[in-house]
Length: 189
Ligand SMILES: Cc1cc2nc3c(=O)[nH]c(=O)nc-3n(C[C@H](O)[C@H](O)[C@H](O)COP(=O)(O)O)c2cc1C
Image 1 (spheres, helix red, strand yellow):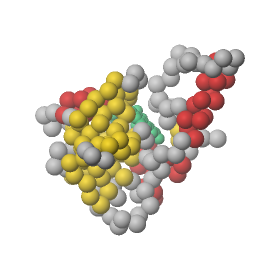
Image 2 (spheres, rainbow, N blue to C red):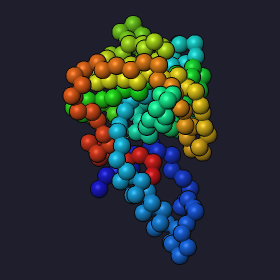
Image 3 (tube, helix red, strand yellow):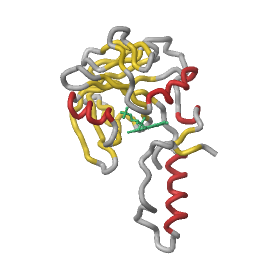
Image 4 (cartoon, rainbow, N blue to C red):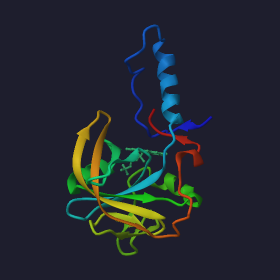
């Protein structure tokens, strides 16, 4: 059985609403497992502060396209995350698509990274700045670069809707990219 991601903020108890007759604790666990069953990709989100002095990279799977005209990408970011503060400040972010073979990378971006501005690395992974100044991993298969157009407080997270201002492949387009199912991890639920 897959493990819940240990850093996910844990709520005090079962969260409603509950269907009539359901046992709250059991239903809470069951609903979580249904959420976890939803297929999703697994990405790295690049961010920077408004003044460009801080950069970060964070593992994230709550990402999806939400409009085709304009081209909007939505991501949900935990309020306590450094990434949250950086995106709220700079209004830009990147979404990095990761090679399936690079799955170990997701464990490297679950807390604020160490930035080496001289070597241009984040926790040892080479990056370059996109046109928005947000970092893009050199080894990402492809990336989408966004400027925030809408922001929604959803409770535990903020949903940032970004308009795609740049997109490119950096590796062969046929490269298989990382999905949640390639790991033994779960998030949220
Ligand atoms: C598999 C996996 C998926 C994750 N998905 C998300 C997500 O969709 N949204 C989110 O806010 N955090 C997600 N996280 C948690 C963040 O990576 C983690 O909270 C991190 O501490 C935030 O990083 P930061 O403080 O450096 O910005 C996920 C973690 C893992 C391991």
